[in-house]
Image 1 (cartoon, rainbow, N blue to C red):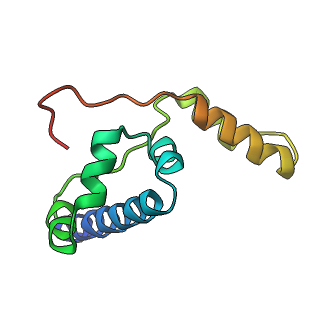
Image 2: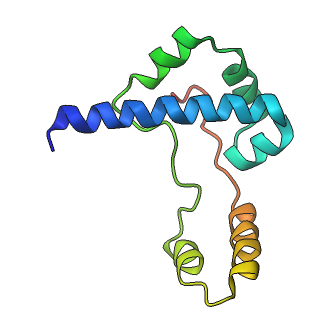
Length: 110
């Protein structure tokens, strides 16, 4: 796969992520902020972006979304969970919720 194909895919993922984030924020802001692991200022900015601004933001060669799980052990616990399906979902939710998000430093770029 060529480098330009990777960039195209990254841009598609970015746009899909931004559109999903906006939709979640419109439906239930508090739950969306929790799930997206973003603060109020970022939530406010995302909600205020129009289609042109979303597209411009998405057209970067860097992923805007990232793993909230930075620990390989947490990821392993999610994927190698021996619990039955009913409890596995609850366990995964608890593990994901327990991970705190790191806000960007002041002046950091998105």
